[in-house]
Image (cartoon, rainbow, N blue to C red):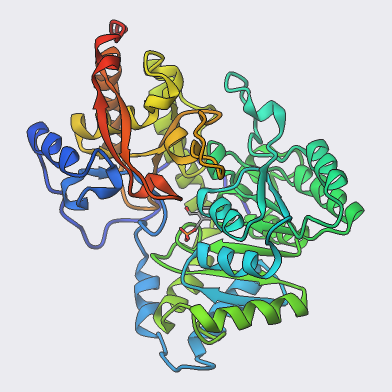
Amino acid sequence: MMLPMPFRTIIEPFRIHSVEPLRMTTRADREQAIRAAGFNLFALRSEDVLIDLLTDSGTGAMSRDQWAGIQHGDESYAGSPSWFRFLDSVQELFPFKHIIPTHQGRAAEKILFTAVAGPGKVVPNNTHFDTTRANVEFTGAEAVDLVAPESSEPSVEQPFGGNMDVGGLDACLRSHPGSVPVVFVTVTNNSHGGQPVSLANLRDVREVCDGHGVPLFLDACRFAENAWFIHEREPGQQDREVRDIVREMASLADGMTMSAKKDGLANIGGWLAMNDDELATSCRNLLILTEGFPTYGGLAGRDLEAIAQGLEEVVQHDYLRYRIRSTGYLGEALDRLGVPVVQPAGGHAVYIDAGRMLPHIPPLHYPGQALAIALYETGGIRSCEVGTVMFGRQPDGSERPAERDLVRLAIPRRTYTQSHMDYVVEVCAEVWARVGELPGYSIIEEPPMLRHFTARFEPVSSTREAATPAPEG
Ligand SMILES: Cc1ncc(COP(=O)(O)O)c(C=O)c1O
């Protein structure tokens, strides 16, 4: 039941029980560190980072009860009580017949796509996350993004900007009969601004999938945040418990992949789930090859316990109200400064539109990377480029600009306070004041796939010379 909030300030619904020190650095320290890292923020030592907004994945704080759960971890190879506790709490929210534990989300993707994809196959998704796309393409299949067209209009605020393009999906299924092994919907849509997907959209997608006899899977990493948005924004959902909304989301799908590093509130873990017996058998056979026995997958018993407890905490309304408000707080503050941000803010992150903020840097000189480097050099904030560095390299080896050059400020769960966020806003204001001086970058070394993790960059002096004057404020 929702209780009315008597005060405006939404507080952290916890108090701090143990603390981790942050290491202060100077601008000179940071300039040296980022140069040594080949201007790739993934290559920094995390001790050289002050506020780490690289990802919300596995970086959250666990609760007292999760740490207590860790002590209950039973490390029996097969049939451990920790496995059954994990299984019960996953099936309480996602009542799929088969639950297959994995060490993280991409292991679930790897197993599923090895089983169902391959050359000639096509996998539609509202927007593939980078590892999902890479795992589809690694099998030789094609990964197709089909986000609703109205969601791609950055100036229009959408309550459900992560929705799938239902007409586009129907057309895709018609033009590839027999070649689509599974349709995916990512909730929330991480690579598209962390925007949610509505129940209405999921129902429409389900209907199209049924019409073509194709199964629907959820990439459900941020299922609770998505369900909270449904609870807040979708007509008729305000009186429902989030756990019931989650169950309805699950009931519309035939299976899911999950990274418990997000809405599992754990530091590691994931699972693959489905109703299809035959598919489950082939996935379990692959699981044994790379992850482990089906009652622990790639996890220790203690990890299974932490996830089981995390799933109970993540659907609590007080937690979700605070979580979504803290992201909105940062997004609104940046918007007030005039920094172009994707509006409304996503569930787990605020996305700065670097393409619009740094128009003097062409996409193939990576405005998102340039902004991320500037945020680090200026204030020790580590963020993540979600744009041409991440998505620009095509399977045929060519390079083209991503649809948008974004910089993601991902907020770890239950980790930073409001004053940390106020500091982030101050650093962004400083960068915004001299944005025209920022140089673009070129890539001097990159691997064949997922290049953003390990590529090395160097500044392009011509963009610095061509820079426009900085805006006021
Ligand atoms: C939408 C989405 N899918 C899949 C993954 C992969 O999960 P993991 O990092 O646990 O492998 C992520 C991770 O960030 C994600 O955001």
